[in-house]
Length: 397
Image (spheres, rainbow, N blue to C red):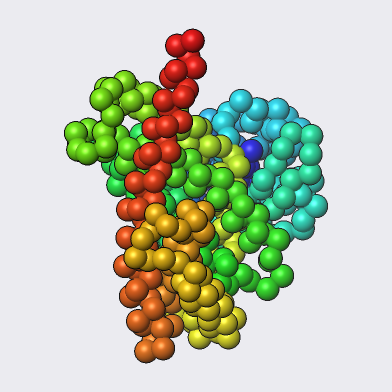
């Protein structure tokens, strides 16, 4: 589960004969947290559940967050007012994979410490993102102050637009829209590949384990999209009526349509989980440390990484028969295709590296990536059809 503990925005001073719970957000407080909520909306899933203390200032803050993310009405829980963590944890059970709770100090700072062991200042409008499993120690993934959260949208759009983090964070909502599904999957895969290449070229100092964790989980999710894409390519081939299409194309079409549905269902489940939401936050924490990619491409570490990728590509190319692709070991050919992708994506992430020395290789890698991709699709079509044939025959017996 991903828990997001949010302190309410700046509130008005208590007036004479006014109850504390009636204090509202100031115009400045509402404006500042509204901007922070819009920034956080780019990384929060549409399945977010928002809970709030019943006090007016907290409810106003919670509603700003819910409106920004586009989620249903806020639920009120007294534990966020009283600071009773044990009761709050009971109340979030069954609420979903990602729950935000808007409350007050000093309770929230104490909760963060109790859940993670971390001492952090919870300023007005700040949010602590915690990966937590029932009965276990949690982990503080990210602490965003309201100014940082408010600048988040600009950071994602201007500093690292190539990664399209919003595509990753909001993939589930996009997948629910059938008209957007193919587009969403395509851009999701591009964004995820960029993440893999970036983290292989540049990982923040002291965060190697976290970078490894992000890449490992990301690859598991990416594997689902690989399957879906393979089925899409095969279904298109079966519908073409061209050379090599089996006589019983209709039976195979029904079989792979069902397999695709299952994979899409699994992808929806995975991307709606707390683990996936935590993955996005872990990635964001790494990116915030890297900051501007244009500055990163000047670093010696990035230049050395690209040079290693270049030499690995050139060495593999010596052993590849590009005149007769079927004559190659197909696993090795697939690895060479991945090496070509890394060159292409690395040069796109850091265009300053694409200088005269590498320009010809980058251009070739992009072309070969496409050629080898079409060949890979053809090989996988044959393999998938053969696997399906055996499965169908076994089911008939």
